[in-house]
Amino acid sequence: VNVRGRGCQLRLELASMEMQNVDFGVTTGGSSLTKTIRLVNRSQRAVDFALQDPKGDALREKGISWNPLTSMSLRPKESIPVDIFFAPQYRVAPFKLGLQAMCNLGQQVHLVNISGVCHATEIKLSEQSLLFGAVVLGSTATKKLHLHNFGDLGAKYGFEIPAKYRDIVTVAPASGFVSPHDDVLLSVSLHPSRVSKGDLAIDNIR
Image 1 (tube, rainbow, N blue to C red):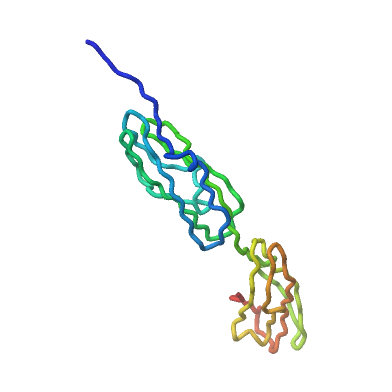
Image 2: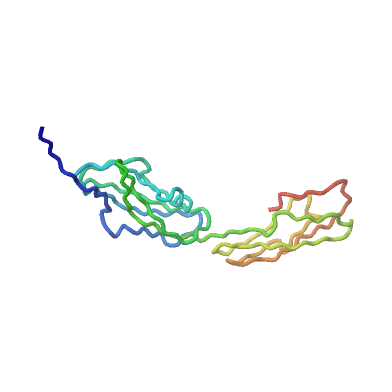
């Protein structure tokens, strides 16, 4: 029995080396950007593969996705476009992560490096709950808290107090502007106009 054969190198590559760095630059939260690369099979045999994140969910957590998501098969010299999307919904610090192909025989082929950054507001209060304890009827108790903007964009803010509590709770300043990486000192005052039968819980202040 004569057995003949020849080993061939796996060559799943980018159509152009200029595609090896996919840089989305700077965008803002809620926007969507798309860039397209093209993969070509320069092997002498067909290649079956699927795209994957070598770090698990790192790309997805940054707002990165791609299409096709399913397994692909390329004959020799055949090529296919791949769309890469950057659609962050929140602030994303600068990143640079890889995207690879997992081939049918277990080979991992690094394809591109993906980078980008998303500027957005990230507003948080220093306290989520304020406890005033017992407040004497006709007097005012005040507590301080900070409104932080950890994001890269300034933002306007305003507080909405349920109508039935507007005569006993005030927030000052009730509206304004907070700059990037800055905070605003707020005063929350409770000035009861009637005696309550039990503890008074005021929620849904937004």
